[in-house]
Image (tube, rainbow, N blue to C red; front, side):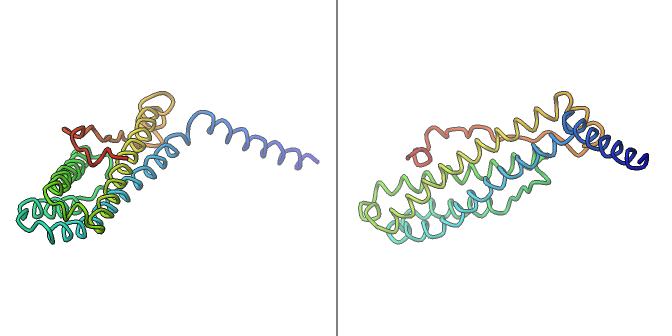
Length: 200
């Protein structure tokens, strides 16, 4: 009977310890980090979707506007630079790497804006079914990118706040020493002028 009572006491103590650890925020940092990682994956998936659309878009425009070679080449080169720079979840605490990634993606956004703008000069291209489908998919993807970036920024804000404030700062300084603040996306200079990324 005494052994049984001791086992019950030990079990209750374990449960209470678990509840205490949970209540004091021990798991908050890993939970917030996993949420930020999930949102980062959404960002990368949408950027990859955009990169996959570009070769067909360039080929379609080229069929009608070969004289726009400089614009077509600049888009192709910007795509190559954007897809070469990879920032995975484990290196998201490196602000310099993150800035390089954002700069390359923003540059590609600007080049795509120019490419879509030249379509205005080519009525046959503007009425081409393949171009219209690609343009629509690209615009939808740009909107998804904007939403994914916003959601990522919010998840990182929660994570960074958790790491900086009590009791998260206490855990970050002891048990979760890997927990470092993460950078967020900043507004793209001139983004308000990129009409193609704001159409419904």
